[in-house]
Image (tube, rainbow, N blue to C red; front, side, top):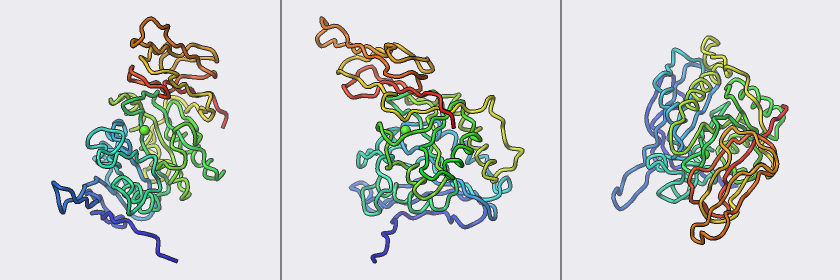
Length: 340
Ligand code: CA
């Protein structure tokens, strides 16, 4: 049997050492401009003695900012004296993409959340995914990968999980999501462009870790309420794990409302190229048949707009941002109440 191929990335921090360490994971990347240089992927580990480990990531998509701000704040607040166990934080998980504020990497054009478990001998994004999957996730009891809608989508701030096939792990996902305490939490299927089994979260689930995610806002901006939900939620997760003491738990204003987006009928896609006129807003309640959008066609302005309706009932969770739209673009998705 050949040995499993090892990551070539080199962390400047020692994950086994007590204390607070800040530094970079070095990904050596030899280019025309920098023959012997490395990409410095920021990482912070705070550890105090034995106990559980939480792995918090953001910037997997580089144009999603609430998670990056929440972790940047948490990094400054967390001290070894405050905790029992270990917290590993990686706010710019796909560093090259986060540096330029883009969903995909400017180096290899890859979407990191569609290539897990990565490849130690692949291009830059595949190497980062492989490092997270093979080196960081195995250290963790719980992983949360903080997302938002990015440049092209906007979300009602929400937590989420892809339901683990392991029923014990699924119950732990639900308990952790209740502790996180977002106003909404949706349970994801693997279809509909959500990344299937190629996401960071799927990698964590495959390794038997409690795997959670978020959609904290989007539109290429910082959603202030989404940021506040993330800051409270991350501390509450550390309390849930026993890493922070109970006195740090902040009760959410209301228990999280569990929602379901597993059916393909929850999604609305553009049927034509043109200009997207939304007819509903985030948070609206709709039923099957409610008009969702018109697509106007100024190239042939004498043609009527194409109108498209929702195919199911639910709350509008996600909405496309750019007006100029191509056939096949996701315009909306809904979520419906879920009994868990
Ligand atoms: Ca995302």
